[in-house]
Structures are given as structure tokens and as C-alpha cells.
Length: 485
Image 1: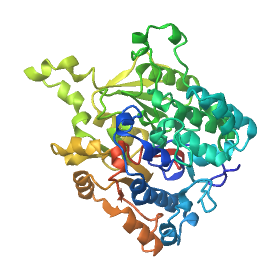
Image 2 (image 1 turned 120 degrees about the vertical axis):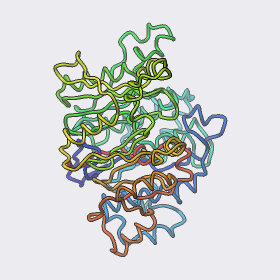
Image 3 (image 1 turned 180 degrees about the vertical axis):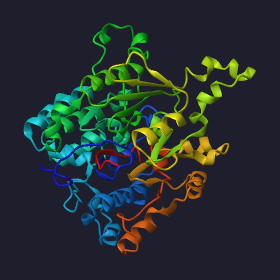
Image 4 (image 1 turned 135 degrees about the horizontal axis):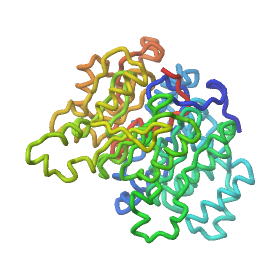
């Protein structure tokens, strides 16, 4: 049970666009093929998907690209052989031909490895059976399974013979939400919805029990509940001032001293306050900007509204970017707008040692410009690329299919979905090369292009099924190690 290389077992993230060296992912598992329409919303999945298309035609490209950038020895010269293997054994943790990279790490692999220890297997099985209300006989039966098969059961909710034991975890492909690396600490999530409780427990066991994280066990941060939460009336428990929930899509480590926390439908103000107190007390960061966004399914997390592309370039949803300016207009309609728009969208910045006197930032563009220029020292002018080219109605349409949710593999090289045409046009206008994942892999195989020399490039990932799940490449990654810019 070892995971090494990639600068030893270093865990450190201090920016959004530094060259990616190690990340945590989860490939679509058999549970996604069991989501039924009547339960899709309860299980926090936007739609039912065709699993084989999602795997072979879409997500497999994502994994191959990640390997080419982070661990090329595992993939170079093998793309054709991998594509022609009907068993997909290259992608399946626990299989004989699994790629087993120590840089592109599937959480299912780590889960299977910690379950090899009998004591851990007993503890985790008991915990899962408790929250899923399984019978004692089922619990005893689960102890007998091979560790990697047991990991599949815990994640997918089903046996290999297709029988379902409990609900699947379709959201686990969005590994960003289970935790976030803040410098050399890991902040663990507290999911907003009961459907993600098992997911959170599995992540806790991986972080606390796997050797990959052993050296930073003291740096794992869990957010405390309100100490009187069990005494609160149900309506107060649900309020933003008492509810303690946080997901990784609402947290961005933008520079070594500066963290962004979004307060959304999934992350509460109370949790943001608790995180701020812990991080300031531990001297982990010096500045925290809290971005309160409307509690709408359209947005969900702050990384569905904006992500960083390059030290001086951001992609964002224009209709929210300038709400601060809109609120300052003096015409009658804006004067009488509910809460002057500011109750729905607001940015407050707190500094260590002066947390009781936050600074208000008028709009998102001002915040992001300041991060690029002051926190990261960008020498070039700060630029914004808008979802849908900021054209109505394409901005909102393409934001819905994750035009703003991009993963930077290194400064200026990002992966995003191929379906957001107007956003891609906007990238072209800013001088970015646009290339499909398939074409890029072919050029890597023939040495026509190289990951090390690629610059200012948008890599298009096939997305007919992935986009149904309402999460992009940023959501589908939990960076563990980045070079600093």
C-alpha cells in the first residue's frame, strides 16, 4: 500500500494555475449507470447518463490527458493499445493492467488500499452499514469481500452482479468537493446534502488512513459543528447562521496568502466563518475573501461562475461579474431592486489580525484583478474571458454547461468542455489555440506537440454526457500538488 514519486509524497497547493503535479480524481463507476429519473435530484445528479459513453467517449480522454501532463511514462506510445482494449482494464483500479499512477490518483484505488488492512476494513464497514441501515448479516458478508471489490461496492452502492445494496454516489466524480489543499493543509468538506454523507465518510477514511497523507495527518482540518446544533429547532438548523456545510467547489487557493470562500446553496456563512477562524489561528493564510452568491441551482459553487486560466486571465459569467456596478445605478428600477442586489451577491475581504473590520469589494472583476496584479504579481494587463462571449442568451446557457469551470494544467493551458461554442470563440479572440482532446493526444503520440511546450491552449473535452451531471473539469479534480507560479 504505497504511493510515492511526484516529489516524494508532497502535498501543497498555493495557486490555481501553477503546473499541476498530482491530483485526486474518480472515474465514472457502475453506480452512475443506476441513477433513475425519480431519484436523480435527490442524489444531486442533474440527469441520467449513458455510462459507457461517459466513460469511453469522454472521461477516458480526461484521464489520458492528465497522464500525459503529469505522468507521461504511463501513457506515452500506448494510446492506441488502450483504446482497443474492450475491457477498459487500464482505467479500472484493482485490475491487473490498471495504470496505477502516483500522480493521477483515483480515490477508489486509495480506498481499496486502506481496506487491505483488516482493522480499517472493520471500522469503515461498520460506519457505512450504520449510516445506510444495513442488517448485521450484510455487514458480516461485506467483511469477506476483496478490498478493491469492497471499495467498488462502497462507492457504487451495488455488487458486481448488478444487485443494488444502497444508493450510488454519482457525485464522487467531482472530487473537488471532498476537500481542498490550502498550502500544505487539507480542509475536509461538510456536505450540504444527506446524499453525500457516505461520500464524506469514505474521504475521511482515505485522508486519515492512507500513507499518502500520513505525513500531514496533523494538517487535516475538520470544520466543527455549532456545539449546540443538536438543541436547535429544525428551522434554525437550516439557517445560514447555524448550518455548518462546506464543499470544495466553493474554496479556491489563489495565492499562498489568499483564500477565496464562496457562500452558496452548498456552503454556509457559518462554515465560512469557522474556516476563517481556524486558518487565521493556524497562520495558514493572511487574507480570506468571502464571496456570497445567489442560492440558485444555476450557480451551485463559485467555481461554476469563474475559474482562473492564467496568472492574468480569468473566465467568468458576465451577468454576475459586475453586480456591484449594477447596484450603484440610480435609475428607479435599480433603486428598488430587492436588497439593492447586494443581499444576493456581496464580497467581503478579511485580514488576519483585523478580521472584525472587513473590506467590501464592489464587484468580482475588481477582486480578480487585484489577485492577479497584487497577489500574483502579473506583469501583463488583467483580462477577462466571458461565458458565451457575454452575449445574451449564450452567457447563461453556456455557464449552465460549465463554460466557467476549467482546470488549469499549467499557466495558460486549460481543459474544458467542447460544447460551449461562444465561449470558445471568446478564447480564440484572446489568442488561445483550441484543440480537441483526441487531436492533441495524437499529436503527443507522434511528438508533433509536447505538454512541456504547450502554451495558451484550450483543450476541448467531449461532453455530451459529462455536462448532464452539472460539473466541469475543475469540479472533477482535487489538486494535491502544484508548482508555485
